[in-house]
Amino acid sequence: MEIRLKRLRLKNFKGIKDFEMDVDGKNGDVFGDNATGKTTLFDAFTWLLFDKDSSNRKDFQIKTLDSDNNVIHGLDHVVEAELIVDNESLVLKKLYKEKWTKRRGEAEKTMTGHETEHWINEVPVKKNEYTSKISELINEDIFKLITNPQYFNNHLKWTDRRKILIEIAGGDISDEMIYASSDKLQELQNVIGDKSIEDYNKIIRERIKRLNDEIKQIPIRIDEINNNLPALEANIDFDVLENKKTELQGKVKSIEMQLLDVSKIADSYKRKQNELFKLKNILISIKADIEKEANIEVNELNMKKQDISFEIKGLEQEIESNKRRGIDLKEQIDSLDKELEDLRSKWAEVNKEKFEMKDEVFSCPTCGQDLPETDKEAKIIEMRSNFEAVKQKKIDEIDREGKQKKERQEQIKKRIADISIMDIKMLEKIDDSKKELLQIDEKLRNTEVNINYEDNKEYLELIKKIKAMEDALNNQEDLSTEQLLNEKKSINSEIDSINITLNSKKSY
Image (tube, rainbow, N blue to C red; front, side, top):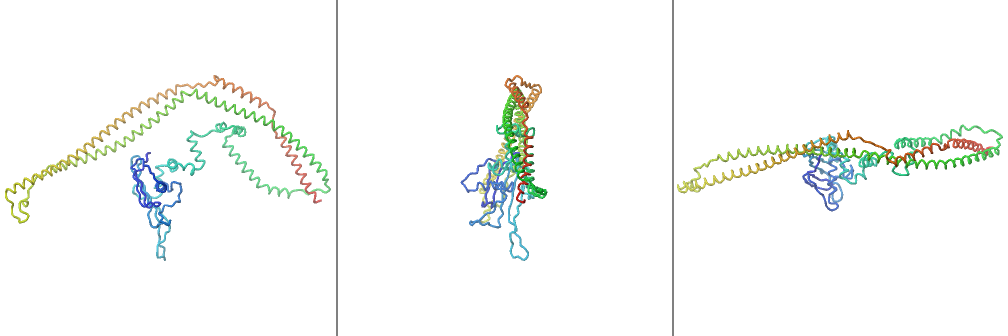
């Protein structure tokens, strides 16, 4: 769809009393010093389309202000634009005005609000019908992206900006591409495993929510535990408990030392895993290069096929445009035919005109007496000559006008013929291009893609290296620390129980 601005008119809009800009569908540059109204023109156009100004604000000052910055009441604020949509005229108009009401018991009317009226091609319509028409013409976000360089950064959500950038970059980003983008992210795959980043993100959010819920429950559980603590036995030997506590704390330190040793081994294990991950990424890159090289002919054929398809589409659109142009030109020829026929009728009427004499012209206008015969003959000759001159002038004017219309008609016919020749050439080009597409499809069907990874020495060496590293990691001693951690947890729980008893020592 092609949309061009032909005319824009403002009346009482943001201080502009009456202004009309006529660009007639051509590119029109609007320039001037600051505060001369350039932004106001754009505000008017975006308000006409989307009820917002160029900064994407719905609530902005449309009304005209006086020298003291007070609103001038009672004005109609109008924006009207004529657009050329696929060579057809479309006139849009909006009027914003105050609503005044005289309430019962009051002497004067008071302003009770505002209302907006809408027109399409001078026909009054409801707001939803008007909005629906604008939506058919253009999407609001697309319009603002291509007309306002600040709209992308200042008004779009970050998720929408990311979506647009990803589409421009050629599509979505895979998890593998994310892992390969930075060394810092290489450990991420080991943590996530076979899950996607998006799924793992959901798991993390759920865990955070669950932990927050558990944190909220801690005071309640502490209170329940305190209420359920058993009464202490009499004659408790607190010295024995202190010794027991010291013994258990020693065991905890011993376990922590073991955990430290295991942690060192685990760090070595992780480093090897990271190195393995890097090698696998290199392998993926080499594999992609091998596949790209094997598919180079197919890719070139597909690119050529895409280029030809775009060319065919462009030619078909041009032919369709020429068809509409041809209809318009033929209508012009028909209109000229009618005008020529009217001129012929007019020429025949003028040509039929005969010189007629009236008796009163041969009498003296002062005294009413008849003129002498010699004077009559001279008068007749003069009148006949004037009549023939006027008649010939009318015929010459009709002939001149007819010749101009004939020349215009011939020009249009030549233009139609040129368009027809152009269409024939484009149809021949389309036909040749479609045949070429069939040949490309045939080549694609008969082209075998042989991907042989075994011929690449670097690929084979990397496979061996990865296999050896995986075997070494699989044969490494089990690094699980779960048993030590459980034992530490059990001892700490026992120490906590002893501390509860020791803390009650003052009550004895």
